[in-house]
Image (cartoon, rainbow over all chains, first blue to last red):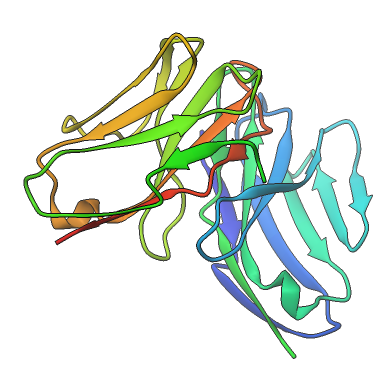
Length: 110
Length: 113
């Protein structure tokens, strides 16, 4: 019940395409869903986050879609660029803990 | 720059040795988390401190220990090191006891030979 399942493990997208990473959770106590971006040799950094009272949040080319009934959320990167190549972690947090997904390595082909 | 400072950035040591990793959280943050990331792996939660007290424990080995000091900096002690302990160790901080918004340092890369 404490897991956050993330897929795919790796993803290759052509420049200009849409990158989609999916996450699913089980614990309905989670009330904050952040995404972190990690470049090689660096620490993860908060990219975008959503609370379950909205179904979508957009910041520039990055959008989180949230489906509360299905307990799923996803990150969409529009017009993907080579600079977006990184590892992305979804996470879910509640009043007691934060749980990270296993990560997705995204490569954007020029 | 996240505001979280970790030292050292790189550390090479031998099996059986003991090392200490240090973390200074962002100004005003009371919570410190330690994570281990092995090559191409995810973030393994080790331990969390909040305002000097241990708050949560993850998959931390008995050979590892940590503490948070009154000035809120934290140290992770790794002893009897094994080859498999080679990894990136990240410290993260947050303002609250539980917060989905963590600020990560750049990590300490430990190599055990």
